[in-house]
Length: 178
Image (cartoon, rainbow, N blue to C red):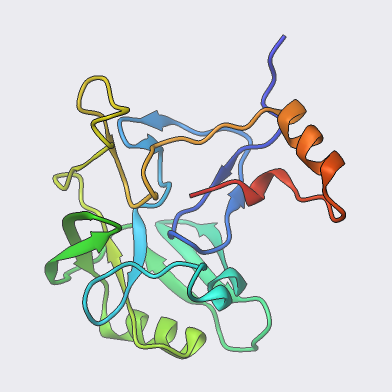
């Protein structure tokens, strides 16, 4: 029998994830997964690969949105409404894809810029913005959110166990994400 041993949602691309007991699957992947993204002054996505300090920002569900707190700073958390109240629409880039995003308020963007030490803005992917999965692997024009490329990633426990048997320092399941 197959069982799901861990399920994680990453509301903001490249920030820490949230473990959940269940999740709704939508056309873009898991509901609320990577619908938010931090972008630089050129509207290009930010990632932990370039900015490892992003891993220190931890989201937590709250009624109507998320709180984001910094794991090491005493700065007050910031509340992020599920969707921006009134933001500017702009073309944003994720790898080679360009799609539409809506920016959050200046105060939210200032919080992230201060927390990360880089000028950035938080953007939301609205429902009418569609980012296609790579056509080489898609079957029927599937879409994704701000993920690196695919709506859902799955790893088998036996594969993780095999990998960890080869590593000096085992890694947890939630390290596999895009």
